[in-house]
Amino acid sequence: MVRRLVVAVVVTALAGSTASADCLKANTPDQRAEGRLVSVRITIPAYAQKEQAYILQLRAPACLEGTDDYDKVEKTERIHVFSMDGAMRKRMHGLVGKNVRVSGNAFGEHTAHHHAPIVMSISTIDRL
Image (cartoon, rainbow, N blue to C red):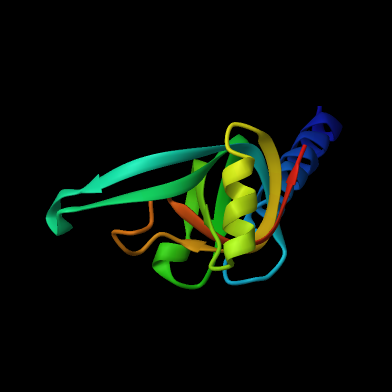
């Protein structure tokens, strides 16, 4: 009986450490995520503005670990992905509706222009 309890505690502890190890790290390069890329139009009434955003609908929920409060996300199924590079934005446009893997620098949403709990400035995108 005691042996089973010890095994159960060890398994639970390992599962817990694995879950936290799987979180994206805020403000750290080369973080990776996979999912279906969609393009959405968003209306921001407070600014009388419409925006287009690329959202990665994740294959499995993700979390984000960071030091700032907005960089702590327990669970989400969406990441707002973007790039300031024109060639990368063109590539993203061509991959809308496809399953992709992205890598980049993740952080928590903190402005009206961020449209998912996690935001990622991507450096690579590849079709799966």
